[in-house]
Length: 201
Image (cartoon, rainbow, N blue to C red; front, side, top):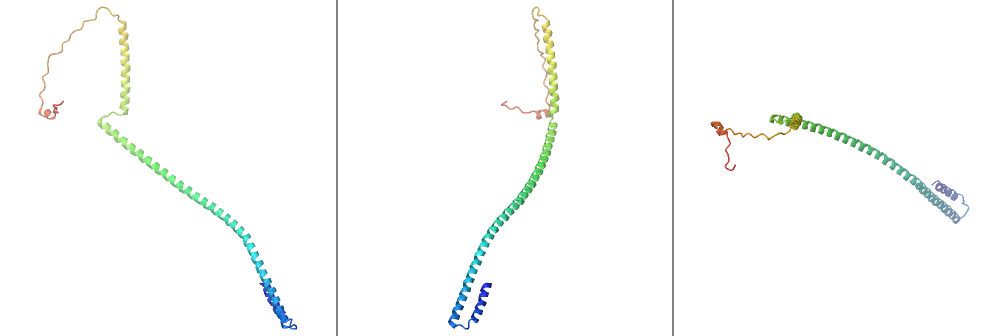
């Protein structure tokens, strides 16, 4: 641009200097100066465009690379943030689930205890023996069995000591009692309460 202005000034100076020459030569000199200045300007524009292209290409590559780096950094940051958020949400959900499980287990235990207590009370009212009663009965039966075994062992030992001599003793014939009890008279209330026998029984 500066060269173009200087060429324009040189044109005006060159036009005023050769007044001694003829008008044709002056026009030709002006045309040459103008064509040179246009050629110089065109060349300078071309070189400026080439420089701009080269700079854009170099800086464009650098800009592209810097944008890629920024994108990678941004992606890492967003992943870290997202991972942190996901971890925080997961921890919160797990803690809530744990609390709900504990509450449910406590509630279930309470319900189970209440149910067992009520069943136990109902069984006691009905006269059904409990676990402790059954254990004591089992122990008592075991003791009685042990004593019966001892008595059986004594009796077999005693019978083995006595030798069998003579005839076996004759059996006495026992006659059952012939007295029969009279049936008691049924009262009116007992007759009402007595079940009616079915003919099919």
